[in-house]
Amino acid sequence: MTASTGARATQRRYVPYSHAHYAGNLVDGAYGLGLFGDVATELSIQTDGDEGLFASYDDVQFRAPVRAGDVVEATAELVRVGNRSRVMAFTLTVVARGAATADRPGAATLLEPPLVATTATGTVVVP
Image (cartoon, rainbow, N blue to C red; front, side, top):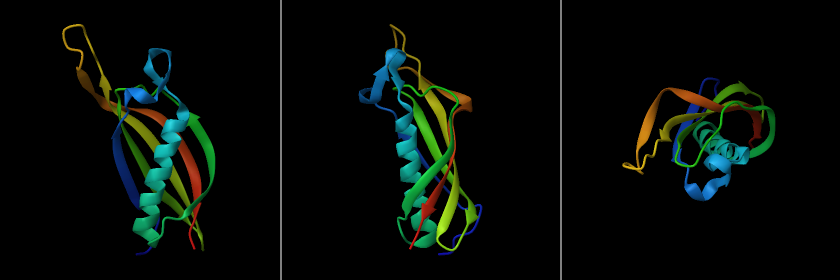
């Protein structure tokens, strides 16, 4: 295992309705940040053989809403490698969105292109 820039990890999740907190089935921004933590852990394991410890987020931007019923993709990319620190760039995209109608309450649509919902950078420390 060698940490090198360009390494990536991606996870997809369905956003359950139990996570909706606001009108229009909106999900709070912390949901995406939690996914960033998960994908950062996976990338740390891949590159360093350790889960690492998240030290900080920088430049978090909430660019589009995430709603219950969405399918989201969280990606982490290693952009800088220090002796013990790893700087990662994160992107949360909505790849599918619920499109319920009276006749088809479970309808959904793939989004092409995917909708960029949240971006951030963060630092993880490994032993």
